Length: 396
Image (cartoon, rainbow, N blue to C red; front, top):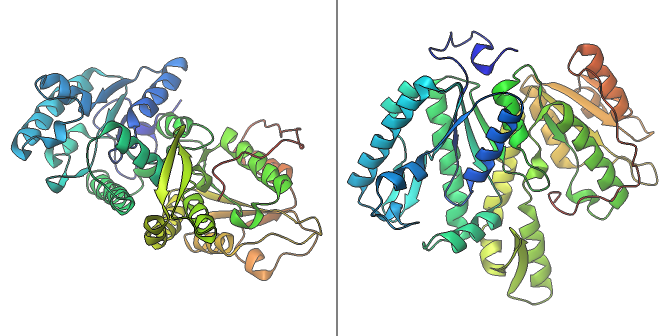
């Protein structure tokens, strides 16, 4: 099987064997268990993967530092410690079949904003792929309050996330060139570690962005179940970048409902823990959340090969076509992606749909048959449990 490091020659042949991947993410994303799952998937499939957690290695080299306090060290010692650990990683990388490096691109801490990598060492590492792992703002907030003693606001978390994404993308583009950087959501309803494994070891798979209405069908359980089945089919056969893997809009909806009840706070379950959020604070970052959703979804389209949009129908036959889905289709078309639409309504789609779509199909089965004919998938089987209940999270 062709590995990522052998796929394509746009940037020349890499100087090492195997696949080297750098995974970044802001403090509070909890990358370690996610990365270990990627390695477990690889090992079950016969691929040896060395995992290097930079933070753990720094603590091991500095046993005098209390757990959770390493970022409180003076910058000079922190930088020297990181460089020393990365020298060890570079030595280990020479003998590793495949490598996963868990690190950060930036830190925003008591020292302010500062880089968490050294350019010369990243060039020497010569990673094939860079991934920034992202998670819901409420989930990151919960972990920060549980695991770290640092004052923060929701605005801080949103800013940190953007900085980490941007810094990693710049690093990847400078060192590797276009097409080696990906944003991946940690996932709400299922683990997206499989997608990262496929990015590393199955580059022949098409990268797909599933597009579907969210808020417009929140009170339609049958339609939600249809959408879930559509997402599941694509996730089974492709590398999917699913916008439903983050559900931060939920915070805004809950805040609005609490304000309508005259309440100043509301509770949300994050990481199986009940968290209290201030209505005014959530409303103060509403524009930031909406703006990041907009930008992130377009980024997910840009890093995909194909967009497949599911347009369900209401019980009266009318199509459920949201402005968000229309914007996604237009962006994908203008980005020269393959654009496929599953149009469930008996009414004819508008020219705004047909003029931007590569092809329009009446069902998921027919679009999957088309992909089979194009060689994108081999065998596939659609779910038969049409009466399934929709998932409860990751949809608004």
